[in-house]
Length: 196
Image 1 (cartoon, rainbow, N blue to C red):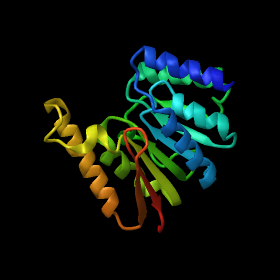
Image 2: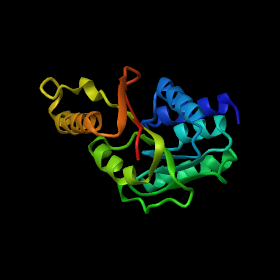
Image 3: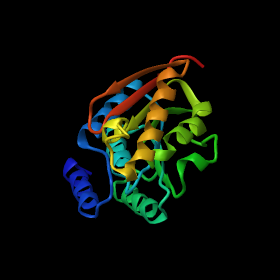
Image 4: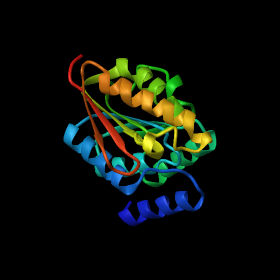
């Protein structure tokens, strides 16, 4: 499949109001996967599969397990994996990532990409952390969610912002990780596991 097919999938998601990663975030994720030379990527919050499929098309040996809590979206992502001819190495699971059955049959996790419900980021990280391979990366989208200022945010966003702040602070203070923030999209937080 081509970049044009990926762009159609992106446009379809946007037209339906399905949240997907920005193109700059997707490119950053692709580069992390390529530079890290990982074998297994876990995606928390797959929606219709856009980012996982984009990465899969650019890294032909990579296995991807995507978690999507909305069953209809996970089914659609699975259909797209078949259309993109990557269903043999990309699978989507219709459940929240934090309730994943671990360890994964695909092997140790080399990368964890989190783009799910903002309130669940810390739980997702803590679920998968024991299964991260040495040198694995964790990439979290929306790390600067709504500017991370609960006082200036709309009341409906305050709790989510507080949860994202908690996630950021916990990862930044976590021993055994080299952590950096990037001003890409709504903010990316990248953590590299430097010790086992």
